[in-house]
Image (cartoon, rainbow, N blue to C red):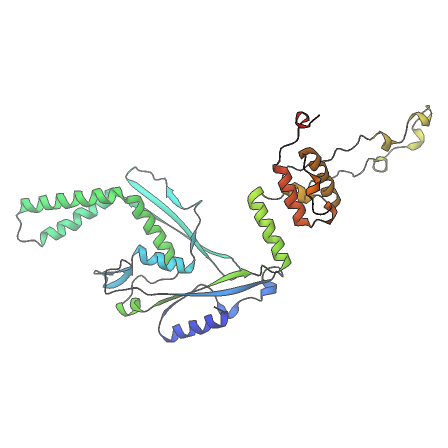
Length: 355
């Protein structure tokens, strides 16, 4: 569905009297190129419509006799949350410690994403005291027993005791689930700006949820590069930061320019200069570094990657006749794949070489 078709559907829903839940502002979507660092992306409007049945016992909504309003069950709130793509921060969502053993607490932190993938975040917690729960049950069934004129006082006490114990056992067993449902339901209601109660006509009207999703253009080369980097980072971890000299360090071997030395007072070397070859001739041969993962391999330049692969071919005993072309003609992604294949092979030991 294009954005134009989505706007037509939104306008039609408004005219039909739907309950509109707008999680973005379609008329003020940012310019695509300026929105996300000049990458080729676009914003896609997502429109979903949900209907709730008030005639049958669907479990989505229920009638609250005290307020005489229709309210949402957890099942109905879950449908709206899925349509709005509400997610939870599970690192901080969960049970919380309480001061007493008969009290449980659950904290829920949810969010949804707007046009630029920024989050609208909200947290709620629910605390349930089993002592208060039992007192509420006693009060509830005592009020019911007073209206019953058919039972004697002894029968009323037995009725109250039986019902309170029955309901209290159930509530104590499921107290954490109840706290979690209440906390998450409160977050969903606040994020979607739902009313506390609806009339039958209001809740029977469809609920239309409008949200926005950032859709990248996978054909864009820069986007392909970033997606590849994210995939590699997800498997091998983040790319290490390049090493840098600390503040005040001086590059190079010759630091005489940085030291205040009187060159006229330095005693000249009395030995013949021929006995001391130039400094570079005494440098040990630099051993070729063999990366241990694909990230280290990608850090190398093109020629160094080829040198590494040449050495690994010898170490792994790979048959060069299987190469379809010289390594210098390989594309970067083919070099990466060839390196990963060689990395999985075992090194050839001396006893493995036939004599």
